[in-house]
Image (cartoon, rainbow, N blue to C red; front, top):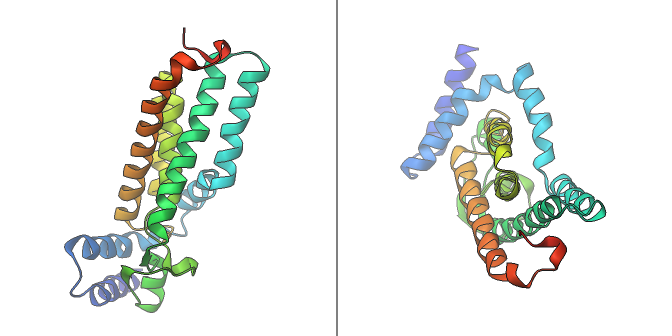
Length: 210
């Protein structure tokens, strides 16, 4: 295990020679946590993190909105609609960036010693690491839910942090991919909230805060 880890760290060092300090740090962190990839904890957390993919998050947000509307629970309906709008904006933003940046996945770096981060429009999944879409969507949805249900911030935030952290030993993303996704999700939800507040006086009575 130790020799394999040393091999990964050396491969990461060579692949990112001449790169920025952030890229070098990303590669070294990836190499250091590589042995955790096949642990039970990471496998279970990684499986759970699939809820952060676009279809599950959209389905969850829509279900919350529909349940609120069906039961005439204005707070629940607002939460679902906020979640949908925030996720949509976060997805749009991360897609715009991802479609213009080619960055090789950590698994490609450790397996082949190949690393790139440059302007590009690759559709190869192994070249679409930046930013983390799972993180962007997850942060946007969790923050949107917490606008209506502040008590959810702690539990949902902790679960989200564990799920996104697992993406590193899973070799799906680098730490800076996740950091960028977090910023995108935060900004998307903040923008939706700003628009929501401006539109609130014109919302149907059933959705009004007061």
